[in-house]
Every structure is written in structure tokens, then in C-alpha cells.
Amino acid sequence: MLSSKELSFRDPGLMPIWNKVRNGIRLSKEDGLVLYSTHDLIGLGRMANEVSRAKSGDTVYFVLNQKFEPTNICVLSCKFCDFAVKKGSPEAYEQSIEEMLDILNPDIREVHITMGLHPDWEWQHYVDMVRRIKEAYPLIDVKAFTAVEIVFFAKKFKKTHEEVLSELKAVGLRTMPGGGAEVFSERVRKLIFNQKIGAKTWFEVHRKAHKLGIQSNVTMLYGHVETFEERIEHMIKLREVQDETGGFMTFIPLAFQPGDTGIKTKNNFTSAIDDLKTIAISRLMLDNIAHIKAYWVMLTAEVAAVALNFGADDMDGIVGHERIAHDAGATSPMQLAKEKIISIIHEAGKVPIERDVWYNPLHIYPAEGTSIVSKMPYLNSVPFYSNFEPELAEIKLSPLVPRVFGQFAKEGKVDAGPMSLMDYVASQDEFEMLDYGVAVSGKAYSVLLYSHHDWKHLSGKTIGLTAESSTSVELLRVLLEKKYGVTGVTFERLHLTSGQNDYTKFDAVLLIGDEALRRWKVGLASFLNVYDLAEEWYEWKKMPFVFAVWAVRNSIPAAHKEAIRNALEGSITRSKGHYDELGREHAKRLGLTREDLAMYLNAFTYRLGEQERSAMEEFLKEQAVLA
Ligand code: V47
Image (cartoon, rainbow, N blue to C red):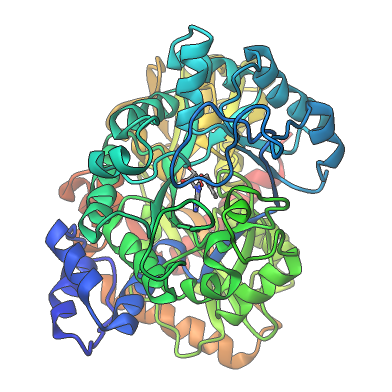
């Protein structure tokens, strides 16, 4: 079950849809049309907000970014576009790579590049653009080139789509923006962008990008000549491809800016009601897309702010100098200061998280008076959160992997959650331990060492380590050194985003959480040995292993502590016996059956007793005397 929330509606037609959504049943095209026709905007928004909360907690993400459109000269003339001009036009401009580097703000984390299809620029120019940005600013990730641009490069420079993408990836292309999708309808394409690629080619390029480990976004340009039916069909097509590749991160509805395009729309700009409905409906239809973006540049900051309670969990970023929308009459400012974005997110009652291109959290900015609870995004933590309903609105949830939770807790920004045992030990003075945690006696299935060698032969070898947790890493070190007498191992941290890792270069790799579970049935590359670290510990010590303990910051108000404890106790109690149902969404993503799921979750102990406390002490004793 996705949500235990009981909602009531003014439009009774929404109840059957909510029942489907909360039970994890996919919405049909007919459901989508019912949602567009409803007059119960608030009911629609509440459903979408609940879905967003189930996926992202109370978090809204943003990225410090800068948009570059290095030329508006374009060989195409799409009816909806007021940005593109022909070469020789008085409005034509070209920006050199030096000019881009000059105005690049070194504090940002993402540059977003899209542009006109220039008739004369050479292939090397595009490669250099990405390469030189990465060379000058290694911390800035490049999100560049829509599928339309990739197809243009392939044709013009006689390369395959794979060659174009691989060459760009080799110099630092990290992700692709979602532009050029427009509406996946042949009828609409013929009417307003008949020179541009259609849905089939657009998806082909993204499929290839995903195969190469380049994740991407997807947009939908709405509010021009398309029908509601075509919007819903757009979402359904996308949902089908996402089932295949899993490579889309974010859906971005783009509100059409009519400008001087000549496209006649009923009310000039889209209405706020249409914008909010479209955000909410996309959240409800796209059950397999992690994020929905409220792109304030086209929505206006005011509508985007409301959209944060209508299913959107991302606000894009500060953006900088944008032209595609502004050339077509957008009334939003060119840039929103970081402080303004944070205050918009606070006003919406949400928790701002500054992220990188892959949604790895970099900083969290809790509002005054709130207490932040970390929502461990792993399947084994489902019982903590599936019914976690604190009585106080000041308690907010944010999805954080253990290591990031540990880091934010140390910075004083996050106040409670299932803390990695090692992080708890390091911050015991500031945190109180509750009687809950994640422990297992025997196999954990999700803390696995994949190895080319037997334990005994790992001396002098290199092991890639999950970047997500420190406890499993310490457990591995204890097992190597104390159980098997293995020394001289070199450890190397893996990238937090799994698609960015090349596991083949290691003698062994340690994976945890959902990344380990995903490989449970299929194995990992050519590694022949798989060792379950919790099982290794159990066979050695005949004791459970405690991976995480719930801890609450001493200094938060007593009422907050009480509310967290009650919500947790309520969730664990109500979840018991319903694991196969509660973890269904996760299991689908990880390729696990209902039986796998029940077996996996039933292996864990969530209430910590005497046995678990002694096991923790024993582990810390072993760990303390490591070389
Ligand atoms: O593909 C062009 C659209 C897109 C107009 O991936 C217009 O994070 C409205 O893709 N009114 C480019 N839209 C922008 C884009 C984007 C934006 C923000 C974030 C991301 C992301 C991607 O702009 C084009 C086209 O669909 N567009 N003209 C117009 N008059």
C-alpha cells in the first residue's frame, strides 16, 4: 500500500481513483481524463501531495544551476518557438565557449545547455564545450543537449546516436535535459513542429542514453493545440518506456508561453488551475517516475509555490539567464536567488534540499521550529514509515541514505531517524537512542560482498565500498581482519549514484540497501562469490547484527520527541503482518516477488532488546581494535 491516508472528496468520482492510487494500482487513460474533468481541484491536489510524500517525504529539491543557450540560430522553424531565428537575422546571437566560461558561476552544481540547431558549428565545438566546462569546474555537472540536438549531431556529423552520446559522456556529459519531447502525438507534431523528431525517435535516443548510464528528464509542452487526451497519452507512453529503462529521473510539465508564436490559445497563458491540475495528474499517472518538477520559469514563482503542495517535489534552481521562455513572453524573473527558493519551499511547509544532478542531497535547510526525521529510502525500512503519521506538523520527513543522514546530523540539521550504528557512536552525546533499529540474525540479503576471490585470498586486493554507509564498511573490515586474518586490503569509495560506477575494475565490491537487493537475483558482473556480511557475522558470533539504531537529538522539544516516538511505534505496530502489501512498490522496482519480500522483511528485528544491545557492544569491541 502506498498510503494509509483516508481522504474525503467533494467530487465522489475521485474516491475510486484514490483507492487505486493508495493500493498501488496503476491509473488508466480513463482515470486520467476523470482527473482532468474534476472540479475538485483541492481533492486532486491532496491525492498528488500524498503520493509525493510517499516518495520524497516532505522534501522539495533544488539545484544551484545556470542555464546556457549558446545560440538561437536554428535550422528548424517550429511554430511554438519564439526563441529560434535564422542565421543573418538581426536577433541572431552566438556565444563562444570562452564567454560561457567567463560568466559561469563557480558555486553552482549544474549547467543546463540547450540551443538552436546551428548550421555551421563543428562537432568538436560541442565536445569542447562540455570538456572545457568540466576541466575548468570539475564540481559542476553538465546536463546538456536534448534528443533533438543528439539526432541533429548524428545526422550532420555522420555518427550513430550511441557514438554521439558516448563521445559526450567521455568528456563529462552527466545527464540529459527533457526538452524536445513537446507532446508525443503525431497529430500535434504535424501541426506545430513537423520538422522535429517524433516520439519514436525521441524515445530511441533516451533509451540509448539510459543504456550508457546517462540518466535523463522528460518534458511535456502543454497549453497550445493539444487535447487532454493527448496529454494523458503522453504520460502513459512515458510510463511504458520508464518500465523498460528506469532511466528517467524527472517529469517537467512546460506551460506554453504564447509570445509572438502565432499559436492562438484560448486564454493566452495557461491558467493556474490548468497548471496545478497538470502537475497533480502527472504525479498520479507517473507512478514510476521519482520526481515532478515545478518549473517556475514557465509557471511563475507564485504558481510553482502552490504546486509544491500539488505533487511537485522539485523546483529546478536559480536558473540564471533563460531565453526560450522569456523570448516568448514569460513574465517570471530571469533568476531566483537561492534564499528566495528556500523561503518559497518553507512557506509551502516543505523541507528544502539542495541537490546535485542525480538528486544526491548536498545541503538541507530546515525551517525554524521544525524537527527533521530522516526517511531511510531502503526497502527494509518500510515498516518505520508506512504508517508514520506524527501528531505535530512541525515533524518533517526527508529521504536520506545513512551516510548523508550521518553528515547532516553532525551539522545539526537533521534530528531523528535510523542512524547507522557507527554514526550513532560518533554522536552519542547529542542523541538519545530509542528502542528501535534494524537488526538481523542471519542473512540480511542487502549487505553483500561480491568478490572474485575467496575471503582468504583478498589480502593485497582492492575493494570498492558503498558510499552509502559506514557501518557495513566497518563490519567488512572486522570480518576481513578478525575473522579471516586478511590484511593489506586497499579500499576505494564508490560513487553514490550506482550508474556512475565501473564495478569491473575492483577485486570485490561491497553493496548495501536497495542496490544490493537489485542484484540479489541477477548477480553482479562476473563476480562469482557473494558473501552476506550479516550471515558471516552470525556464523562467527552467534549474535544478531545491528545495522542502525533510531536516535533522536537531545535538544529538540520534548513534544517533538514524543510525537516521533508515537508515530514510530504506531507505524511498526500497524505494519506488522502486512509486509508483502506495504513493500509492493519497492519490490516491483527491485524485481522481487511477494514471497521474496515477505521473507526479506520478516528476517529483520525492528525493536531492539538485550540481545541486540550485547551484539552492538561485541561489534564495537571488535571494531575498536582494528589495525
Ligand atoms: O523543448 C520552446 C520548450 C523546451 C516554448 O530537463 C517552450 O530539467 C514554453 O527542455 N513556451 C526546452 N515552452 C526547455 C527544457 C527544460 C526546461 C527546464 C528544465 C529542463 C530539465 C528542461 O522549451 C523545448 C520546448 O518544449 N519551449 N518554446 C514556449 N514558447
